[in-house]
Image 1 (tube, rainbow, N blue to C red):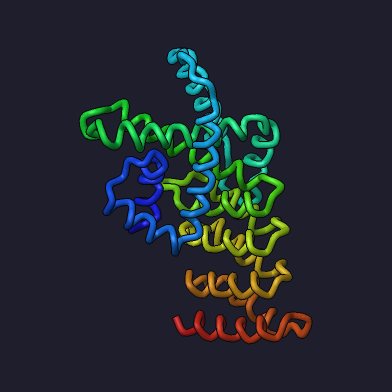
Image 2: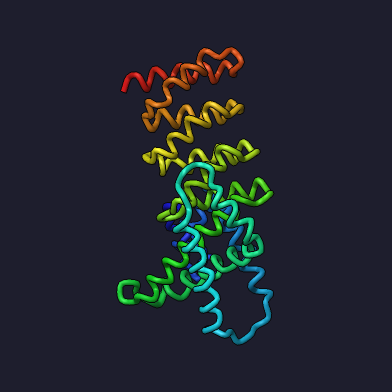
Length: 271
């Protein structure tokens, strides 16, 4: 079972709507996948909070209008974002809209529940344009939640945001920029390491390759340096050769990192 399949079944799992075989398969996956367990924990918290909200008659038209207004603002922000390293547009937007972060997370979880419980079991996507539109809105909100989490003060929340970004179907340039910003500036080693793994899906982009080489020159953590060496070797980035040579000759660099740099040089020169 893939992480993507698990994400689609979490809502049914929380609602006890899975069959015995599906539930057993999902639980086996959760027992070995930290990222999916983290996502389930986040949705479970939202589920419990939703359960504590008093029942009321919703104003569907007003809710839809507010949702579409928020989504329109999000898309307008996305169209202005740039894909270069730094992620300043993403960071400034989230700072200006920090009060929306809990709302974004709640909306994303609620929509996932609706899609998983109602749409997944009762409607056929191929014959329901509104369902396809709603699915796109869910993907957009999942991206916004991931970006929001990557800006939190808690390292565990930022790690969760990086994990969520790895599960997005079609992440936009804002996600790439936020991950690069995390790699270059996040104070937590584990979060920076996770961002390297998440950036592998963008490895064909020149901006990401340049950011990896730049990070290799500036990072001081041996764990991060070795992960970056593996990254540039895996992506066959010959532009990193000169940086690797400098690392291999720098006596102030950790000896294990210097040895790994030599290994990286050998592998890149061989391809």
